[in-house]
Image 1: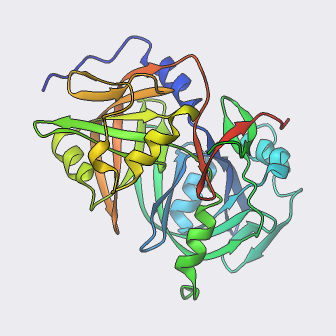
Image 2: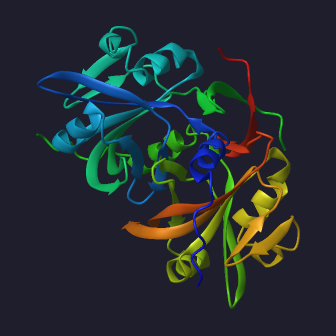
Length: 168
Length: 168
């Protein structure tokens, strides 16, 4: 098979393409002796149902990357549309100091989680696959919290949107 | 650290939680001497920008799993809202025979792709991580097609939706 050379402008076009990949916004959290840690993430996928397994991609330069790699326990909190400000706060380095000062955060065993999230996935790390600047954290879901309401906060084309149920 | 026992009903609750994870719908395709192969997929994530890398989770019982593992080249076609019927066709085992008979499919080198998709990611497989019933296919993006329109087909709570730009 021929190996096509990478296109000129590949990086810029990849960013453009990824703006078209609408994704649910979550805040990934963990806690340790230093306190609570968390970041906003959209690169999350359901891997398989048996056993319940998810993955999340995290930048290796974040503190959370190191903390999860050490602690092995973390929570994925799927956000609702009312959580835009929380998402901004956990997504901005400038607002890092204020994280966990607003929002309905509470603790359970080794976890810190957002009580009014759409869902809380309490995860046990199984494996980290390092790829370029990021790690793929593959985790078993040990416990779950699920709200009755289905109202995901979605990120698309650099902005927050919600779902509109007009398709058949 | 204590290891909490898995909750009763964990599997059922995991399915409920995953219904809250709205995701863009894609059709993943590859071709070989036997012809064209493809399935609908929603477990797709951007891994990192440098180098451009994506992942897709694929059930090990599908033919596509074997084909991509053999060929190493595949295309992720991000669907638009007009592609609902295509998504159903590539997502149903019953409709497998009719795949590629409708839709604007064409070929380029080792790839078969959907010309009017939101974006086409022409991928070169780097690694497969096997987890339970599925494999995580991690791939470098070698080439890209990007449409000007941003109009992702989104799957949420077992149905197709589109984005509504009402949030600030």
